[in-house]
Image (cartoon, rainbow, N blue to C red; front, top):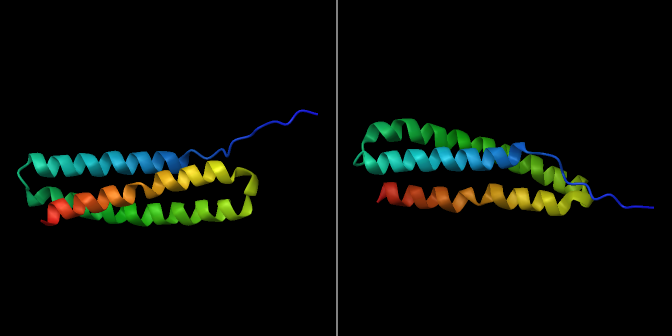
Length: 99
């Protein structure tokens, strides 16, 4: 009998992590290039807050999947780590803009 290796099929978490990273990085670069124009912050901070809320919801969802699907824990753990990798990057951007 053959064992078929299946992967955890959920692309939304990867798309969310990469998408929020790209948008927040673009807004940060726009802020730096515009010589710290506060108009960019008016757009960026509500988006960052929304991204934090949506990423938290996705983190809770992935944690639930991690608990209930032990056969996919490796794939889910990778997705959780990718999602959590945005936290230090966003915090670094915050420290730079708050100087």
